[in-house]
Image (spheres, rainbow, N blue to C red):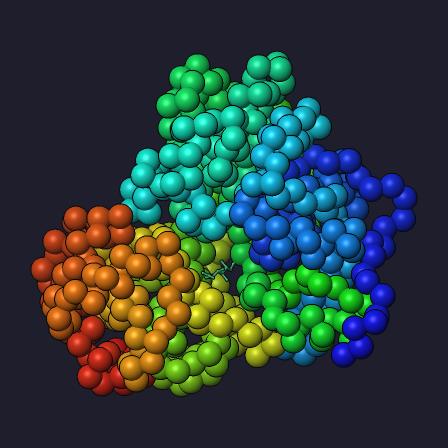
Length: 482
Ligand code: CS2
């Protein structure tokens, strides 16, 4: 691929829109989802909702985007063809550790009316099983030690909100776009908890004036590979060092509760603004993310590289149908007007899209932070309701195998998880399935006592864990719905 192609530049005519949104945790997902909704809303209804992204850890995103004036390509991958689109809604990218004050100042500026977040599950510095702030988290400890130099997303929110209060400016709306249950309410609780420890009066002000709408976000966005960069360059005739690739489908359901009602015209770009997001959130977390994680661990252990590869295997395709029909959908109340069976059928088509190379290894990341809301909650409810739940038990057993760091053929697994060292050490110290399962079930950050103490569940989990080691992932998946 000729490296001498010109660098991508913004395509906009006229001035750049003013900044109305600061986005914390600028990754591929937001650039392929929320940013597009905002760009389209502005195209329809105008107003200044330009976005400045903030990287909370590393400078690489800024370094790739700055030479192209923060424009990037969003490449839609449909089974039958590709559609590239140049997006220029980003006004800049700040790298928080380089200059935390610049981030706080921008968040505190009167023109900033919304702060959106995609910091992933682990970015909330909470205990996944309880949703409470993790006071032992190093970033939270740093925020408490020196609130003027925040480290975590929560620390930045609290600091910037304090500055707005002191300046007599309304708070911004905090709009989380991560896959967590009751994400807005949970984030509000975490922000209030941190603020309370720094300045109780601030916490009271945020509780009274702040708004933290919950959202359900959905679009499958696999990580961009070096080969994708060359492919995009060939398509658009210039060099983009930071394109995003995504499926055609997208959905954004938002609780319509913004400070002063001030928000982009997101309805114009297809977002659903509703009074109660909870049923949408639960449906998506369980039907999509729950099966995604199940397929990721079991598919990986069966030697499948991507989700599309996994569901093209008939054993896994039948397993997936079984998960939805017998274990997941019976426990769900559909959102208004939604047919759950049709929703699952649509999901299956999305998973099967061969143009989306979404690696099982990528989805397997951070399982300690994902399992509770994706799998364990519905597993516990299903068991209590007398459903067999063999598929989700097998998925938990697969996670337990995976975090041991060795696959079923004895090859090492590159486990990415904030708890990876601890998980690995627990598995290494235990001999045999019963001991390994017991050691992992004892982790209260992940497994609630009520589930861990269910002896029938524990026995079946040990059987599934031993079955994976003895018979292999594919055979166990097949046996599950035979
Ligand atoms: C995936 C999600 O990586 C993962 O854990 O399950 O990123 C998933 O692709 C999105 O939530 C889809 O909306």
